[in-house]
Length: 153
Image (cartoon, rainbow, N blue to C red; front, side, top):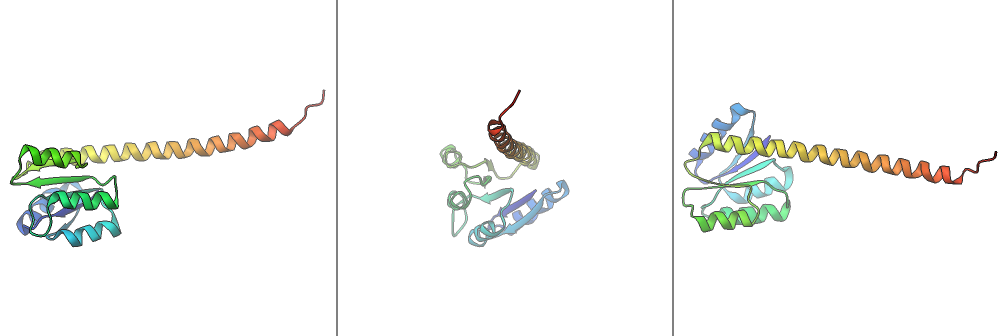
């Protein structure tokens, strides 16, 4: 699972990367939001962890920018300054999660595991749908061919 992490605190970036790497997560860290957003535009990631309060952009602004690029972006906002209104706004804008710092890594990993499972299910559903479309098309062609056949007894 590829995770983009954005935080202006380099110690937090190192700590998150060190905590998540043993779980097989590939972590890509940025201490400024703008290059991280550009990276997302080019590469796509399975999840984004972003700080809420940064000098150049807020986590809400990052969320909005990523949703403009990919409406299915899975963005988790982390903050040391959280309040209920901010969390509610983030969730209403499509955040996948909202966590207060210091993070409970076990909770975060559980959330990422849940996201990974949901993504696999969606992929399987999409593959099944594509297969059904293909089979329906083949059946339709066979049906049309059968309609043209005249039976002589």
